[in-house]
Image 1 (cartoon, rainbow, N blue to C red):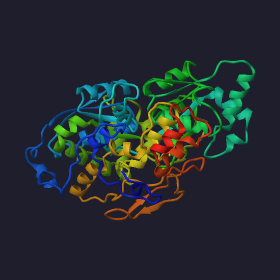
Image 2 (image 1 turned 45 degrees about the vertical axis):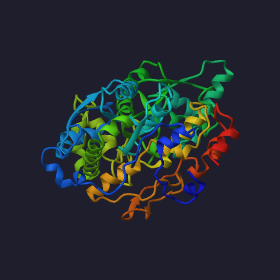
Image 3 (image 1 turned 180 degrees about the vertical axis):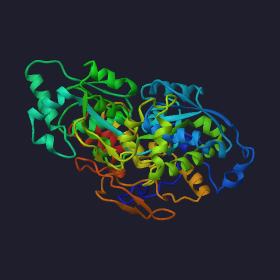
Image 4 (image 1 turned 60 degrees about the vertical axis):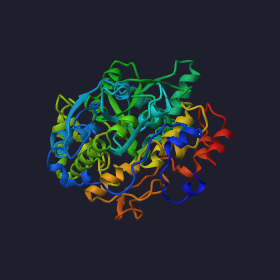
Amino acid sequence: MSDTNTTNNPARIPDLSRRRFLKTGGLAVGGATLLGGTPPWLRTGAWAGEGGGLEKTKLTLGFIPLTDCAPLVVAAEKGYFKKYGLDVALSKEASWANIRDKVAIGELDGAHMLAGMPIAASLGVGALPKATITAFSMDLNGNAITVSNELYERMVKADPEAMKERPLSARALKKVIDADKAAGKEPMTFAMVFPVSTHNYEIRYWMGSAGIDPDQDVRLIVIPPPQMVANLKAGNINGYCVGEPWNERAVEAGIGRVLITNYEIWNNNPEKVFGVNLEWHEKNPRTHQALIMALLEAAQWMDHPENRMEVVSLIAQKSYVNAPEDVVKMSMTGTFKYAKDEEARPLPDFNVFYRYAANFPWLSHAAWFISQMYRWGQLEQPANILQTAGSIYRPDLYRQAAKALGVPYPTIDVKKEGVNAKPWTLKEATRPIAMGPDRFFDGGVFDPAKSGEYVTGFAVKNLKVAPDALLKANA
């Protein structure tokens, strides 16, 4: 890929020959790109009959009981899968490791995945490499960092002024940690849901911005989302970063307080994606497109405010999230409670499922996650970050589905992240798309064209690759 593909301006990244990339030393494996116009079977009218030539119609898709599994639930419950000739069974899984492994061996046809999971699966982070792709981002935002009441009070005492800030920094936490070190105490324990989760990178980014080294100053452990609240209550952990409804459940139970949402850490950040094996996609390209179209229609429906309470009722059921509707609706209906004794605050963009081009698999989003994998020592071989992103996130496939549905879509694959503090309009699209803010809470800016400089520029990091080699690979 030439340097002209990664300019400072938003730019379209041309289709990458993914097998050629593999042969020339890229990190990810790949397959052929679907080219050409919209085929007849992709036209929405073709789905009214018996399946429109789908390679496979009976599918099992995995999910974790979090509010952002909603696009899958809505597509199943409201008939969007059926509309496109698909007979889908949803399988509730106990952990993200289960999701990863079952998709890898083909027990699941596809799944609700953390935004970093297709990347990690393809690159062999934490498991044997299995080429995995995503062509559909399921949502933006949806997480928060919650701590015990005891730790919150310690933070207020340590730095009352810092605790009044919004968005809240980790400066007060740094003072508590330093005090514990001086007293010879063991490091505090925080939990996140998976080593390559958005939650892991978010809590690390938040801590690192205050000079806390998450690999030295605290213990970071993995706990499945539904078990977070019980572990906080038992005192096994001091805090955690997780998706909803597990922050609001701790608040409602009076055992924890939310410090900051991930919307505040990075406005309108990518959270979950729909992932499939590359091999599965190559065997079932029409089925894959049908899935994307069904999910895209479901996401559109969900982002109408008048439909949100029905979404809440659907996902709160025992077979899905299994949580009280009153808890689920807190974030899903545009409000959020940080503490039990406080009024709910308006946070209309805590869960975004379609607005702001939420479903588009931006290569700049993938590149940011890869940058964090380098920053925290999960990747040890230098490679071009943006090229690697382009072999895993597949905007070409998204565009086929969006074109067939007649919905607007971006005509670029990359944008700078962190430059918009206010709503803005994406003009590099088939029709202008209203976009939300994308700022980082510390004012940072991620330019995918300068990924190597971005990674090596952090004061707090744990690189396992020579900085010069990474800079050269991303020059």
